[in-house]
Length: 293
Figure (tube, rainbow, N blue to C red):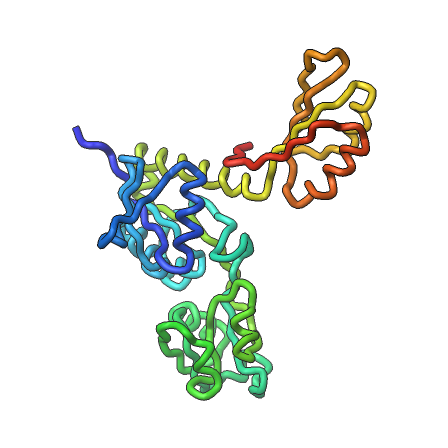
């Protein structure tokens, strides 16, 4: 009897390395053999993965060619794909921040409002999304597909562009400014509706979602443990934040406790000196792989 398989689409391109790293942390390792760059091999026999442009994944999932996939909410909206949204994943190619799909123009351009683009030329990869947005706002413009590098086309080839931006640095480097934000987008785990109704596939997708979220949770958290004498315990506990109440374990030395908790990594540098001052000893900060509440 053959092994049940889940067909999973993974994003190729700028999001690829961040996605594979997240899966690796969640427990799935994908190896890309030489000459088969679109067919990563998983260490999970129940997964059959393919690397595709994130723009393509929503429709392949909608049509059942893929059971599930990782893509951007922006591309789901651009395709107007009918899919089941399983999980919002707060990571992108550089940061954990969402991306913005924006209309941008040259800093020296006279355009101040979207309506100023009436009759103008706009270049974008988001043709359908842009056309819908303009139609809803009652603006008629010529929207043309661009294969990328939209920023270099303004202002000599087109009047405006619609692009995604994570930090805004590329827009600034090309002397562009944002006219309007069309959409705020995060990475999503999406599923085909029929696959979501099948017990094996749904359980597999839910397991992947749980472990991916656990890996993302762990990215911003660290474990912290220390030894504390009972005379200092109240002072230390007053300083200590926690995901849950700290774990206290008595040590073999009478009157001493091992204290262990989970904290946000961003507060560790200020917190540890305060804990030391409150009487904590033997402080150890350690990384986490997955945190599942």
